[in-house]
Figure 1 (tube, one colour):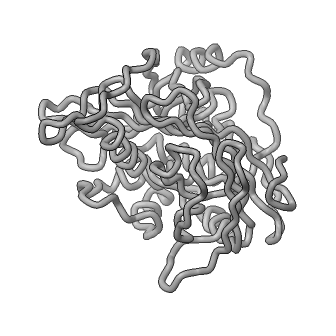
Figure 2 (spheres, rainbow, N blue to C red; figure 1 turned 180 degrees about the vertical axis):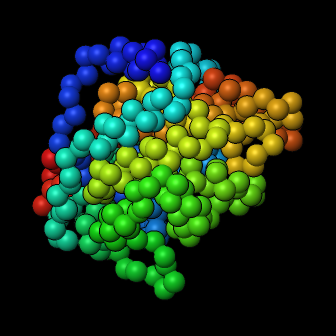
Amino acid sequence: MDDDLTLLRELRADAPAPDADRLSAVRARALAPASTPAPVPARKRRRFWAVPSLLAAATAAAAVLVAVNGSRTPAPPPPNAMTTMPVRAETVLRQAALVAEGRRKHQEPRPDQWLYRKDLVKQPGEEQGTVQEYWTRYDGTRQAVRHNDGALGFQDITPEPDDDDLTPRQYAAKLADLPTDPAALLDHVRGDRHWSTLPKGAEPEHPDARAFRVLSVYLDAGVPMPPKVEAAIFRALAELPGVRVDLGVRDAAGRAGIGIAYEPPGSVPGGSTRDAQGRIVSRSYLVLDSATYRFLGRRVDTLQDEVVGGEVLARKGTFYASADLAAGVVDEPGRTP
């Protein structure tokens, strides 16, 4: 344990102490629209603040690759290799829980305030990526979006019949009600109906895979979360067999952090994608700051050529990545913290 903790300290020894707790908009990153700085498309309410799972991110990235790397378009060359170091997951996650418990409690925004979030998204083969900014009213009635410093696009949000998505304020209340006992939290998330829909054609999930997926969504929530709940999430992840932790995983901004992935044995459905030989084809990471354990972004690495029906959908060495660049609470859209 001491060796792993030493590695963590040395990895980001110059990192500043954790700053004030950040608040940010919670919404889905629809990966395909994010690939180009196009005008803001009209989207359903659920796409604005429901955060996607790692499995959904990997599936969406693969769908983008079909368009980018189809039979008529040459695949981009693999980027520079990323050097990572695996460490004991339990050691890292229990340390993360201790740090999370010491955080200052969030002050909840007013219903008429706006949650701001700025992201960088890189699709496979992209050099610059796309900068996305979101302003979401805390009561969930409106959202503004801007891509690459373009024009601000607005949309009023009207609840749809039978829509079970949550507004940011409702989501914060949901997180505040989560159990703080790790075992009870695992039981809860395995049966939680929210974010239960998988991409069409996906394999059935193992209960542990579902627990990992939902807990990773919570860590990327961006709404007020009690420190004890965040600590419980890390401790619950430490109890899941198949959770992998790597040091040196880079987000879309190039920041090296802690990568958390779910990688159970090949016989367990819902884990990493494997080929016919049992080799892992892609690995999906939730990336955390190595000093503060705050969310940095997500990354999906293609480790083997992904071939379907004789066609290469994703080349070995390519990746999808995102980076959370800024977040906060403002009084109106267009402003930044």
